[in-house]
Structure formats: structure tokens, C-alpha cells
Amino acid sequence: MRNPKLEQLQPYPFERLRELHKNCEHLEGLEHISLSLGEPKHPAPSFVVEALADAQALTKQLGIYPATKGSDELRLAISDWLQRRFGIGTDPTTQILPVYGTREALFSVAQALLSGDEGSLVGMPNPFYQIYEGAALLAGARPLYIPNLAENGYRADFSGITPSQWEAIEMVYICSPGNPTGKLMSLDEMLQLIDLAHQYDFIVVSDECYSELYYDDQSIPCSLLQAASHYGDGSVRPFERCLSFHSLSKRSNLPGLRSGFVAGDIQLIQQYLSYRTYHGCAMSAHHQHASTLAWSDESHVQENRALYREKFAAVTKILAPYYDLEQPEGGFYHWMRTPIDDLGFSQRLLESQNITVMPGTFLGRDLGEGAQYTNPGQGHVRVAWVAGMEDCVIAAERLAEFARNL
Ligand SMILES: Cc1ncc(COP(=O)(O)O)c(C=O)c1O
Image (tube, rainbow, N blue to C red; front, side, top):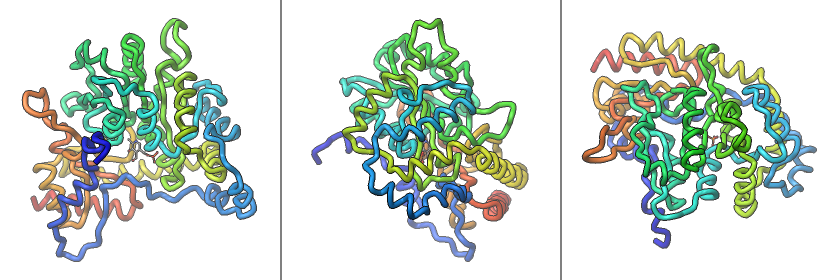
């Protein structure tokens, strides 16, 4: 193998799940229900589908080499959305960049902006969305895991980071609402991190792809860019050292469209754009147009949120007598504590109820002997309530029955 960094990559959680389940057999004849993959299953908005199916427009759009920077109409729609949703004023020509969904952008931003210097660190939550780790490793940095432990209410705890580690950190990933924890980061917590970013000169990359799925109208997810607009004394550039990542996948049930954006610091956006120009990942014109329509409409998002709220209410009622679980503040996962170890739980659940969940162990990292905490995913499973109401209720009933028989 020529690139030794590839060898540092960990198997993806779904690969580990397949391996764990390879000898598990379900014999009862129940239909399989997957609660392991966070792939939204609510219908895509019909006006987006119709726009994509417009043959005349499509013929024209397919004849265009799109600009990496995206169309003016899309960046304007995103800028308007940021203003409406978060009250953030952005310049659509210099502070916004469309991307092919947040996954590729969360990955490539590290390749574009990290130095590759020996000893550089990238902070990321533990447990986490594994792309952050792969992004850091392939960019030649080492991951620094920031515990999000049950005993801290799953908050990201930065207090264990030493000054020399802060010096070595070039980038910190945060995720709010968190996957898998469903925890929100407050504006104050974000402000503290921005303060540290200025003190130690690192970039904050904020994964906000679940920001529109929340359950309490009194406590709605904020954006890093909101915190950045509250920051300081005017001695820093607007959004300096801050980038926020959003997606249509969860908000608008369009995971197959591959559409999102990055917004923030003009200098970082400029550098990232220059990387992307070479990388060759401009969004096609018809996807840009469909995305413009999706960012410009809020009613389908409200309906989507209402559907998740109904589902969480229904499944929580069924599960609460049997499981130790909390309503997530955002996202569509229950980060559920398991009455037995999570790997065994997931195997036995598949065998007896034909349901797949993601063992928490696969979403966290064990830092080895002498560490102050063990793998924080242990003793949890991540349950994705993405299927339709009927399937979710059936799955919750099977989960309840499983617990009764344990
Ligand atoms: C935390 C988190 N970030 C980013 C993504 C990527 O989503 P997309 O690339 O569809 O925007 C996901 C998808 O599951 C996720 O859970």
C-alpha cells in the first residue's frame, strides 16, 4: 500500500455491525426492521421532485459545467435561510459555499485547511460521527477525543485538554444536535470554544446537519455562526476561525440529492473554495436549482419536524417502562442505555426480534489503559427512528417485548 495513512482508518461502524451479526440468525419469521442507519425515510418534498423531473429545464442544466462556487440564486437562498432561521447576516458571494452534503465537506475541509505538520491534533467528540476521525487521519493529524459522557449529561467536556494539546490543535469538530447523543451545545458553550480558538489559533468546524429536528420550541438548536456574531469586541473578522455545515438530507428528507453548504469566515471559505476548484466537486445545476427551492421553503420542514415529534412521543410511551432513555434535544436517534452489554444486546435483539440497532461501542473510542474513561459508547445503542410511524411503533413494541424477556 502506498499511502500509509489509509492503514490508520478504522472500519466503519456498519462494517463492524455486519461482522458482529454475521452468525446471528432470526428464526421467528418476523420482518426485518432496521433502526441502525440514519437514513431519513419520510417522503422528499414533491416540489423538489417535480423540479428535478422537469425535462426541459434538465436538458438545459445538463449542458452546463457548474461553477464550484455555486449559483448566485442558491447562495442567496441559503443566505436568506440563515437570516430567517438564525438571524445571521452573511454575504452570499463570499461567506457561503454549496457542497455535496455535509459528509464530503466535513471530510474535505480537513484536507484543505490542515497543515499536515507532525504532531498536529484535531479535536472531535467521543462518541462521534466517524468521518471526523478519518478526515483528521488522512490529513496527517491525530484525533484528540473529547468525552461526551453520560455522567456529564453527554455534554462535550473540554476540561481535560492540556495547554500543550490546545497549542497543537488545528481544528475542532463539534456536532449539535449531536449524533449519537442528541445533545445540543449552548450558545455559551460555543462562545467559550470560539474564545479558545482565538487564543490558540484553531478552526471550529460545526456540524449542524440535524439543526432542524428538535423537540422543544423553547430550546432550539443554535448555530456556531450565531455565537460568532455575538463574539468579542470587533477585533476579529466576522465568523473568524468558524465554519458551520448544513444539509438538506435530514431537514428536507433529501439524502439522495447530496446537497448542503458551508458558511462562515471569508478567508476560510476562500481557501476552501480554492481547494474545491481543484478537487472538482461542483454541484450540478439541476441539483443547485432543486436545493434553492428546498432552502426557500419552510413548511415542509415544519411538517417533517412534526412527524418526528409524533413518532418520538409514540415510541417513548412504549419503551419508557422498560428502558432507561431520554428524549433527545435534537436529531432522530434515541441514545439508549442497554440493560446488558450493547454488543450482546444488538445480537440478541436481531435473533429474537429481527431488529438492527447500532451498538454504542462502534460509535465511540476506547483510549486504552490509564485513560480517564472507557469507551463512552459502551452500554448504549443508537436507535434511529427514521422509518414510517407504523414500522417505528412495531419496532418499539418488539423492543419492549425483548426487554420483558431478557
Ligand atoms: C453527524 C452527521 N454529520 C453529517 C452527516 C452527513 O450527512 P449528509 O452528507 O447527508 O449531509 C451525517 C449523516 O448521517 C451525520 O449523522
